[in-house]
Image 1 (cartoon, rainbow over the protein chains, first blue to last red):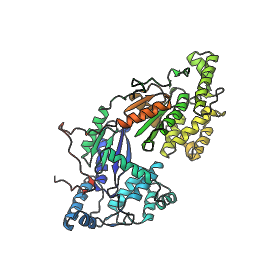
Image 2: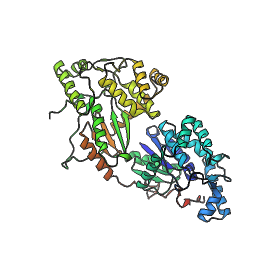
Image 3: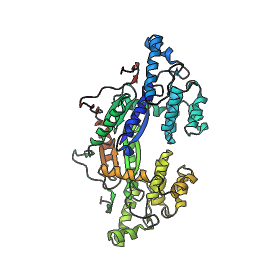
Image 4: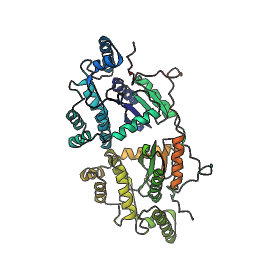
Length: 244
Length: 244
């Protein structure tokens, strides 16, 4: 079974939801047969590179919150994170464009390191003092920490087109599947789970998707009838090519 | 959309079917949104490493074919390959265990090189004089040709447990999905296409799977009712943590 998870590095519920999902997955009997694929989603896709501001400033400016309300929200998110054993700085975090981080994540995926880099970026953004925004060298260091080649990561960051199409394709796919926010979990392209649900909800969804796997459908042939079987090799050998 | 392709390196119809599928995919309007994932399948899983014999000897011994019939079969497969522009040596090929090649393919996958290595292995097995069986250094050279680190590939070959579980997991998955031979194509875990079908059949199957994508299902909640939406971040900001 495959689980796809759409998320953004600047999304606190994605950070918390990933930990909850992983707890839910750990309780799922067939967890060894589950492949997890992380996908990109930008909450703020129109934000320019370098347009960085404190999270609380963004919340008061963009959503008209009072500063006290914004800080209370961060405190509450910090508690949710702590409940999952995650560090969370409730004051002084920045908000900015995550586009370059998503490009780096796709680059990491091509080297089998996407999950590692995602964890490193979450931790850097939510738990560390130094901002992940507005400093390419900071991202290069984080990429190296995830096991990637620093020069290759630097080259990806220097070329705004590198892995950009893959980031946009993930966003389109999320929209086609009906996502309106993140985290967004899709099980075998059949079941959708929205948001940072409790771990038990993920376990139940995995159970249900596992049990509900239905037999494959054979596409109809050109004449509208069932399709002929194609030529195969099997335990009994390879089919002999047909005449004509 | 995702297409998974189960195949074996020692399977002529997989070699031909891959080329036909790729022609079919090239004619599909949404080809840029299709992700192709190659999976392992062993036609002869009980064959020991080092148990290598000529293909014609295997066919006469295992399936009781006359040598003339076995050679005619190879000639016919060579014609099918040629029709796809693929080189195919109809005489003198070997048959043996492909387990180590599948382990290498999973290793290549972890480095984003699976498709490259699969093409290199097909070409080596079907078109080149030097056997791919019974010679680890031959496989190391082919891995390097696919862009992998030679020493790392050598270490994978030297450790029979490396990536073995992934090969077996692919086989189990194929069986669960109803595969009885290869090549076996699965579109979005919903449509199954068996065998080296004509390119047009693949295009039609892609069209049908694309058109037939149904909305995601929400898993039921613990009380049997619909599930509450989880906490998310979206274009309107992040949901505030719930009380209690």
